[in-house]
Length: 554
View 1 (tube, rainbow, N blue to C red):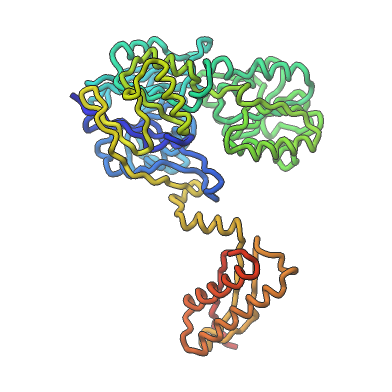
View 2 (view 1 turned 30 degrees about the vertical axis):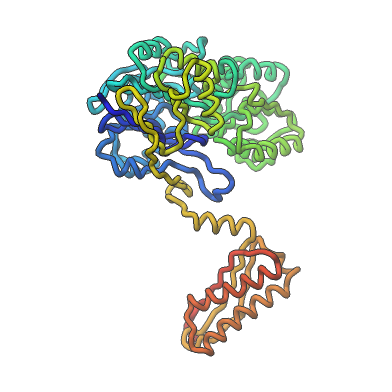
C-alpha cells in the first residue's frame, strides 16, 4: 500500500507564504508557492517566501507544482523556486498568463508550463491527479485530488459555495466533489482564514447592492479603490459604471493588463469606448469612474497620494465621491486611517465598508461544512491561516462528528505520515527558515542587516570623516561629522565638538604609539564614540568612522 506524507513549507499559523507538499511513495507533488508581506519588524523587506531547502535536496523526486489561482499568496514565489529547481508547473488558463509574465520579468526562459482544465483527470509520474472547479475571486481557480491506494488526498484550494455564480470560469463543480468523495478520501486539506465566520460567505462577498445606492445618490466623478486581486469584485464595479453610463479610467497598468487577459480568454469585455486611455484622461472629466487598485496597504497609500494631489494623473476634487470597496485588513490600519484623514481635509465624500459588511471570498463555516459533507474524508487537516483560524476550522470538523484523532493540526515543517489508512506519525520535523526578499532581486536578507535597519530607524546614525596623509598619517583636513535621526546639530554643538576630539585623539595616539592600522583605528574610535553618545544622549546610534588616506604631494 502507498505511503503518504503531508507537510507545509508555509501557510500554517500565518497569512500567506502558502506551500504544501504531498508525497506518495517516492514522488513529491507541490501545491502553491506564495509570498507573505512582512510585519513592521522586518524593515525594508519586500516580502517573505518559503524555505526551499527540502525541495532542492529532493529535486529528483518532484513530479510538479500546482498553482491553483493567480494570487500572490499562492503564486508569487514561483520564480524563486524555478531558478533553483526546474520542475513542471500545472495551472489554469488565466493563471498561466500571469505566470508567463512573472517568469519573463525574472528572466526565466527554460520552464515547463502545463495549462490544465479546471475539472480534469491526468497522470503525473504514474500518479493520478484530478482537478475540480471551485469558486474564488480569481477565475479558473481549482482544487486538487491526488490518488493513492489509501484514497485521495484532497486540497480544496481557496473557495466559496455560491449557487448563483454561473460563469464557467467561476462556477463550483459540486458534482465532481461528490464523485471524489464517493471514491474515498484519505485526507482533506481546507483553508481556514474565515472558519470563525458563521454561515455561508455568499452572497456577502458581492458589493453591487452596497455600491449601487451610492451611485444613485451622488453625481459627478467616482473614485473607487479595491484590492487588485479581488477581481470578482472589480468586475462588479465595472458593470455598475457601465450601467450608470459612466466612462472608466483605470489608474494602474497591472489592472489594465489583467483586463486584456480576461478579454483574450473571452471571460470579460468592456463595451467599445468605455475605457479612457491614459493619454486622453483629464482631471476635470465629470461622468467618470476612476478605478484605483493595489495590494494591501499600497492601495490606501495610492488613494492618499490622490488626496494630497501628488498623483501623476488624478487629483482629488471637493465634489468627488470616494468608495473604498475593500475592507481594512490586518496590517493596513495605519495607512487606511491616514487615507481617510487626507480625504476629509480636502472635503471629499468617502464611503467605506467593514469586513462584517463585505466578506472576502474565502469559505465561512457552512462552506467548510459543505466540503466536509461532500468529500467525507477519513482525516481532516486545516491549512492556511493563523493558529486561531486553524483551531476554528478543527472545531467545525468536531461539530461534523470527527473525533480528535481524525483531525490533524500541524506546524510548518511538521510531517503527517499515513500508512494502511492510518495516521502513524507526526513527530518528524523539517527545519525551516523564512527567506526574506529585499526588493525583486536581492535574496535572503540576514538578521545582521535587519538589526542594522532597526538600529537606524530608532537611534539614527553618525558618520565621522577624517583625511590622513598616507605616508605621515597626519590629519590633513578638518574632521567632518554628519548625523541623521540622532540630534539637531545646532542644539548640540558641544557634542559634535567632543566627537571630533575623540576621533582626532584616537588617530593621533595610534600614530604616536606606532600601532596605527586603518581598520583597527576606526573600530577603536567607534567604540569610544558610542560610549560617549550613550552617556550623553541615552541612545546608541550607528557610528561609522571613515578614515581616508591620500597622497599629499604638492
